[in-house]
Image (cartoon, rainbow, N blue to C red):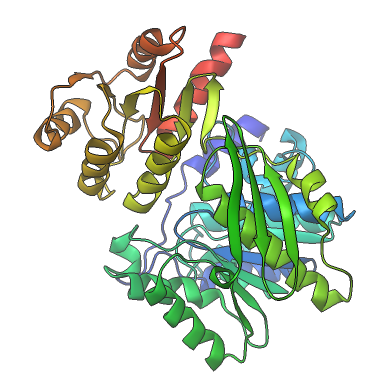
Length: 442
């Protein structure tokens, strides 16, 4: 079997295991496989992150800080935008050769447990097992694992982390996690472990109460980032200068190379997490100078990602994330006319997303397309919903061909300094636009 065949095999694995209602995935079969592999996930120190939004960005900010301190760091995130290997990264993403090697080891272990009457594991579980094998072989100092969905029942919850992190919590994946913030917070809080610090920055008082209560029941120190003050000093096209302070440390000028306001929360969460980790291992807090050197390397594709000077893609795919990207565009580009390219998956709660974009972004032109996925929904149907929510005259165009309508939207804004195009609604859309750009550059 070669690399391409291995990727096809993985992509054909069902995303979810067959389990009881609201269970995204059971871990019993995965446990047997990890034992067959000699438990690689327990042989490297891990940092475990859950949350509705901000997991990947926070993980990358943490990675930057740890690397600045000289640690070798692995990171496991999802989903990928273009290449499945984006999910498993050290100083670069896993090579095709290593990907195949890890795949074959996990596949062999799975075949053994299936012979014993156990079930096949899910898509995400398979990749988690591969990542654990890879990071052990690479002898990294820390691995930052992002949950796939939820926390309590997630594949990654087999970890025994040195610290856990919970980021922004909102309504998403309600079919599996529950219909209220309280229910979803309870699922995310499932990653909290006994006597293990948890750093959280949920953006919700209700979610904070759930996490605090769960942490107390596990004798886990709970560090609420919301009690840390951070103030914007300067906001520019592709950078934010901010201060951050609490009773333990003070930073006057931290610079991040993005104008996405939501990244302030993620950067602050990363700083608080790393300082708590450094306290655990008996070393000093990260200095302001070190922090700025670390964050100079921060890059998270598909999150307020300017692929052209006035064309931005952002994978926001729920109401909370749409609110944050709309806020960032409106704050950073007050003098520009807003153009919108939108696509969404059918299993998302897209009506509130559409309402927010109409009411807050107020685009002058809207382009609707369809993602290339089994979860796709027609552009024409979504275009009709936009028409229902608009209370002003606005040109709306729909086309299921992403490249065609993306090119059309770009022609309207590129070369016009008074215009900006936001492409949002789905990480699938962000990935497909990335693919279009890559192919055009070949």
